[in-house]
Structure formats: C-alpha cells, structure tokens
Amino acid sequence: MAHVNENFTKLKKNYLFIDIAKRIAAYKEKNPDKEIIRMGIGDVTLPLPPAVVEYMKRGADEMGVKETFRGYEDTGRGYDFLKQAISDYYGKRGVKIPLDDIFVNDGAKSDTGNITDIFSEDSVVLVSDPVYPVYVDSNIMGSKQIIYADATAETGFKAMPNPSVNCDLIYLCSPNNPTGAVYTKEELKAWVDYANTKKAVIVFDAAYEAYVGNINLPRSIFEIPGAKTCAIEMCSLSKTAGFTGLRCGYTIIPEELKAYTSDGGKVSLRDTWTRRQGSKFNGVSYPVQCAAAGVFSPEGQVQVQANIDYYMENAKLILSTLKSLKIPCTGGENSPYIWFKTPAKMTGWDFFDYLLDNIQVVGTPGEGFGQNGAGWFRVTSFNTHELTAEAMNRLKHLLN
Ligand code: PLP
Image (cartoon, rainbow, N blue to C red; front, side, top):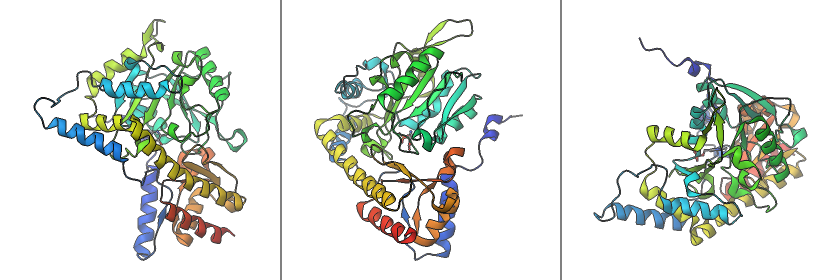
C-alpha cells in the first residue's frame, strides 16, 4: 500500500494566489464588462530585452547544426560562459565569486524550495513573518521545525537576529517579497555575525537585487564580510530581465561553507548540493543559458536597466499616491513591491474585496504572507504606466 508523505497534509490548504484567482473569477462572472487592473501578481509585463532574444536565437541556431549541437551538459551546473558572466557581474561590485561556486538553475523557486534537502530533518528553520510562502512550504514538506522572527512596522519590516534564539537555517529575502524592505549592510552584518556564531546557514534570496538603485545598500550577502562561511545566495533572472516564462536563475554556494554531521564532522555544502543536483537535475537548456548570457552582455545590461527603470517609475507613482492619502507604506524605493496598511482597520481580505468591488483593482492581502501581514496589503509595480496610473486614480477617488 502506498502511504502518502504526510508532511503534505500539514500544508495550508489553499495557496494564496489560488484564493485570489477564485475571487476574481467569481467577480468576473457577475460583472463581465468591468475592466480589472491587476496590481497583485508578481509577474512582469514587459517583453524580453532584444539582446536576450538575440542570444537565445543564436543558441537555438547552434543546436540545429551538427558541429555546434549540444546534448546533456557535462555537469548540469551551467556552462562556463554563463558562470563567467555571472562572476563578472559580481566582480563589478568587488565581490569575488569563483565559477565552481555557481549553480545555474531553472529559476530561483526550484532551489529555494529544494535547498532544504541537504539539511538534517531535525533542523530548526527561522523565517521572517511576513514571509515568501515557498520557504515555509518546502520546509514543512521536508519535516523541519519552523520558527518565526517578527518583521513589523516597528522594525521597518525587517526581522533582526535575537541572540537568545537558536536555529540552524535562516531565510532572508532582500529586497523583500512581500514588504519591499531592504536590509542595510549593517543589518546584514548582524545576521552574518549571528549565523557564524550559531554555526547556522543563511539562505539569502536576492531575486530582486537588480531593483536596488541606492549604491549604499547591499545587493548580495557576499558584500558582507564573513558571509562566505555562513551563506548561500539565490538569484533569479525572472524580475531582473523578464525570465518568468523563460526560466533561469542561479545559486551561489561558497567553497568555504560547511555544515556538520551529528558526530561533529565538517561537510562541504557545495559538494553536498553538487551531489544532490547530480541525482535530481540535468541542467538548463543551452538556448536559455545563452539568453541568460545576453542579460549580462553590455547591451543586455542597458536594456535590462531600462525595463527596471520603467517598473520603478510605477513604484514611484504608487508610493506618492499612498503618501498623498497618508497611508502608512513601505518598499517601492529599491524594490518593485509596495506594502501598505489597509484603511479603517480592514483585514487584507476585506480590503481586497473592497477594491475589487468598487474600483476593480486587485492587490494581495498581507494575510497570505503570515500573521504579521494581517491588515496590510501588497501591490506591485509590474503593470504598464497607463494601468498603474489608472489604478492609482481610482484608488485616490475611492479613498479621498
Ligand atoms: N524568490 C522570491 C522572493 C520571489 O518573489 C520569487 C518569484 O516571485 C522567486 C524567488 C522565484 O523566482 P523564479 O521565477 O526565478 O522561480
């Protein structure tokens, strides 16, 4: 008889975006002629930059020619041409990343979800509340114990380490999804020192690093001294370069990073992850890796920045609208997410329905990200200028 992995029965029944989709579908059925503006979903709207398409086409053409055709990639960890481009990208900020520390993947979600495989089942995992739900779900599936660190308005929605709390694995996301909060170098240094003291490992999700415009804010945890002995970094080209439908990202596991066996022996996490990937992952397709190399090309970098600037214009407008309405809000400055307090003490879900019913604008209730999200709401800057402006006009009229 097959027994189900009962960890799956411990997951919350409905995933946030399924709930949202159901409410939108029900509204649309009753109001088929109303135009809904989606400010909730975290998907990009601009097409791929031309350099990315160009590089991908070149890769696809090579696959159709005997001399340049490629089958399985030897290691499944990414071609050197892409790893070199990634390493150079970090090098520009003074961060040295050897090619052997880089693992190319099909987007950050896979590795943020799978990394828990290489940690002991009795690990205590610390996540912030509110939290990107993947960290919680994947660790429930992996039988881990989860503890929460508060990220509230009082701390600028940034969880900070508490020396009296012990944990083995820590998930940090900066710029943060959902709150848009960004850690300073000093704040990240506090986490790095805490993790090194506790011999814990930080999983640093840098999926939105490209949105950090302020040069004084860190885009990588490896900008922080001491991080290589305590951190793994995960990055994605999804929001950086419109890869949500193309799928490519990368994980960095420094050679210096170790975890411990029950008898105190030290084990390389880079080698352990290599072993895990060797059994369960056969790499990213060649044309997609070429497309990813296009992101890091000189022309690609200019085009990618133009797209990010486009979204950040939207963020600016959203932020100024909320401020003019005197609504407490955060994010939107070095992040595509804006997080704000619901008016009149509404719950996030009540406010969701209120916006949908009255102005047909869709956002994401903070409750979907944890207890501390209650009464807060997330909107994103990924829509067009026109629709963002229209949504903000509607919001102004409604709340004025
Ligand atoms: N990490 C965070 C914080 C995200 O918000 C997302 C996507 O929304 C991901 C990871 C996953 O990105 P990808 O599309 O690369 O799987």
